[in-house]
Length: 282
Length: 248
Image (tube, rainbow over all chains, first blue to last red; front, side):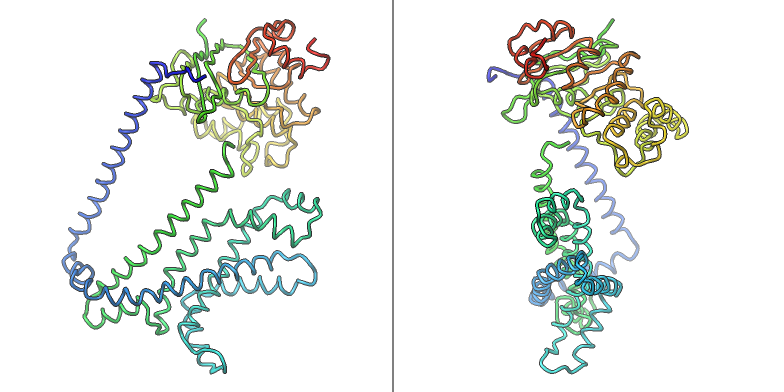
């Protein structure tokens, strides 16, 4: 069959496809330029723009505050690097506890339900304030009084509740026929979960999980509320001293830059999964 | 009489694998073309090329006298005239049977909800599904689901109906209830291209049978000729395997 060569009609068609593609690229480019031009014009021509530019987009202050923000941003990075794995573990544990069916494990299940209900209900800001100020005030022996630690614990507790629900949604989305075939093979409930349900569930919930992590990365900014010296604290400190809010914009830029790789990783994982598991099943 | 569908020199490959090679086929109005051949011979791919679900690599497909393999043709306009039923039913599980059937008439053809529902109910009634109209597909048996899928395809009154091994996932008892509907549609003059493993059915309803082998139409003719006196050795081999009693 190697003797096939495209017919004149096919070659013509390829030409048409090419020109259609060129046209859509052109349209996309023009639309982008038009939209962004309008946005910029709208912003710059607003009456208070000069004032805003001076207080929020001041190049001098951006440069001045950058080194401090850069240094303290590592505190935020450290918080989420430590919190993320902990959240995964706690979240999955809570989700599994909620799925437990053995009679003896009923208290565990009730605890898991109560945990997600309560912790998800409390605004993260409040939880950080309560734990960051409250736990050290207990003056417990042998535990740290560091606001940073307790604020991080608050983040872990709060996000684990969300992540547990994400895991639960994934676990419950696995079709009952999978459970039936695992049981038919003689697997125990725990084995079924461990080897059949959870691996499929985790794959399914990777995008919403990463979504929660992006959200967590941003919420590390909340620790500045209990006096932890992080990038936001540093920016506000600089701003209050110099009467200029540009550092806040700089911090915002830091957070955007750090969350983009995670977003792309999320897209890539999702695409790879679709290609692998749904090949040709359209 | 101009042909409803005319395929010439169709070629389709996935990477190095050539799935369809120089396939030519003419479908006149009221024809019932049955595509037979072993799994992987290209029957499904051919059907999917016909309603532009797959981009072809060469050849020309003309539908109602107009080339639809041109990249400038709007595939939705073509598909609104061609109905398709899949092996796995592909009903939308979140909609009731009635909603499944009225979706395309309402969204694509601009039919009012009342008109779409009365037409769907009439067809569902004719196919013995009247009492299942408000149920969700998963509540129905396989045969009922496939009949519902047929109704969904027929609700838009397509000029051409493509059936892709629609009984392959059904047990023998349910095959009959689905095929009797297809037979009724064939007798009513609906033009169809059918990929099937049901040889007895093909022999009964087909105006023409095509035997596909490794992406080529090896042999085509009226069912009497293909089933009784096939010219190709490969066709004889295939029929010996699939027909109980050794091919005649």
